[in-house]
Image (cartoon, rainbow, N blue to C red; front, top):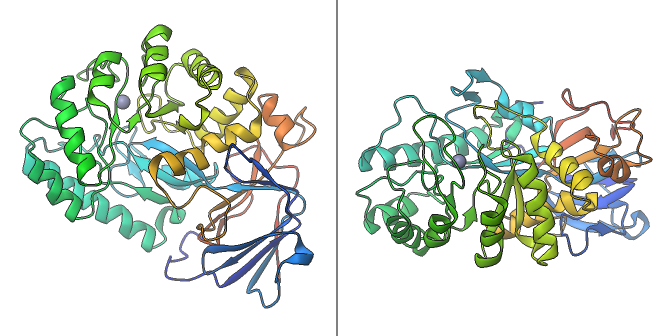
Length: 400
Ligand SMILES: [Zn+2]
């Protein structure tokens, strides 16, 4: 299944008998529908089965009453090349995350490449190569077809506006974490972030203490001055700023607030609560910051959803939206919402066997990780029962 190429189009796919349809949109998290119709990788209809044109499907999936949600988006990863990370010398980590329901990953910089170039020409060359290589992997259907959006250069001293224009013209759309390169001062970062934005390149900034020996502190004043599009790991990666400093960022910046698995869990919970109190929950997006010193967490996004729902008392369906529709909107992605015209990237979930929760949402609210029963990317089944989650009580079946 992992070798299905992206050129193989899904044709018409009907998913019926959905027990719970999570939209990814926190303003309307649950849709009153039991059927989704897909044509060549895109959603074309959502509704009751009797109201949908289900004839002539190439593939029909009986969801068997399980939940369908948008494929999860990990807003913060550090890929290098292929499905290998030198950080913990591990292979197959992206495919393992597919089994945790993740269908899209966004690079916050390919900074773990041994001998990473730090001169401007080398930085640009690496960014363009990484963008091409991960795009090529997806096209070839490698690593389960997970959409790894990579080619995210970190800012180094000496970069000029022309460098950002050149990278943008070559297809680079992301900046790696500001602060991981030699540019660490707020004013210098702000100038480069503005050039990047002008040329359609989205930016993320490291927030908090140093992640490993050799990296540095980025405090709230630098984050505010740099004004990157995403306040990367607002709960630290790993060491968080004080709760007071995090509140300052919530209140004084309009940018996305990214909460990660590899950060401070107390600040993760407090940040989510504060965002709800400030009525800006749309700014919360989730990542893992894997691979890192804490390793790789194939279930990291599901663990964040369960953590925030159970410990910050946020409804589970809203927490799924943090990891899907919120990220889609804050980052301008097509995927991450269940709407006609959007890519058919889906995760099928059910309560884990023997969870104390009565159903999927109740189990997550109680802090349990749900079971993944199937993952689709662009309408193509990429895995069935997850090898990594606890077993789902019920799983979808492909009907012939
Ligand atoms: Zn970082």
